[in-house]
Amino acid sequence: MKLSRRELLTTGVVGGAAIVAGLASNPALAGVEDTGLIGVPKAKNKKAVLNVASQEGRIPGKDLPEKLAKMEKWGLSGIEIGGGGLEKRVPEIKSALANSKIKMSAICAGFEGALMSDDADVRKKCVDSMKVILEAAGEIGASGLIYVPAFNGQTKLDHIEGRKVLLDQLPELCEFAQKAGTLMLLEPLNRKETWYVRLVADAASICRDVNHPAACVMGDFYHMYIEETSDMGAFISGGDMLRHVHLASIKRNLPGQDERDFTNGFKGLKMLGYQGFCSFECGCVGDPEVEIPKSVKFLQAQWKKA
Ligand code: MG
Image 1 (tube, protein in one colour):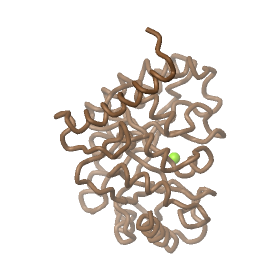
Image 2: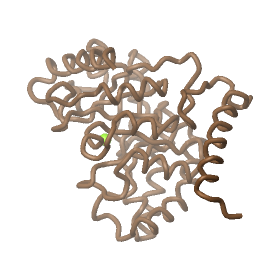
Image 3: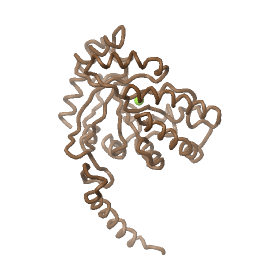
Image 4: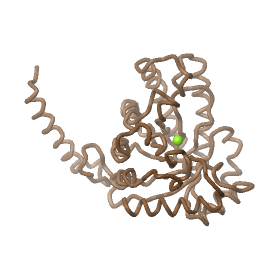
């Protein structure tokens, strides 16, 4: 059957309305409510929260307990840790977190090779090393493992071959992550770092095709400033797959250290009822002991304004 453009438009509208109506009546979706945007449910009665976190390396201090104590004092609520050698740090991290109000957020990379490499051995090395990190991530209660399929220069595959290779491997990795109690967090970067996944919507589209509850995405305000047309639109396109956010200014320093505005993106997070962490992945101009608490206050003001 061939439909005219007019018929397509009509059925499209009816189809959209049916999806919205389905959201309200589907018992499997009890606990979520319609945001007014097709396909973007949000947790019922869950008002979005600004949970500021930081990568471990950004915080000054001689060891993890000292860093966590400072973070608590400065109004942060989560820590992000690098994935390299994570399995050897499980007892240390668990005991430090047990004595702190700071919660574990995501694990940043740290695996070997590249998931989207054109070399099967390199892909295998990547999957194997990711599994070691995912096990450890689950043990310490991390929300997910942040990964980039391939940095520029790490693959000879094009868009079509690259996506195929990713879709061949991600279902197994997502299943592994879910069993370990964590998620796979696909991070889009700007074109200078990876040509392959640049928009939150690109990442969300890949995860939609993976179709696994552990296939999730994140957004990084630094890359988003370079690539996205709308921070709010980008986050909304991630929908309930959006589980982590990186924070940085235009020059990749602490938020508030240049003119980067976060209110448009924060509006998107509020629309989603976002419950995840927003984590510093950035440099710092000046003394971090002074600048980090200042940046937390700046973000809280931006959140209020959004
Ligand atoms: Mg990032």
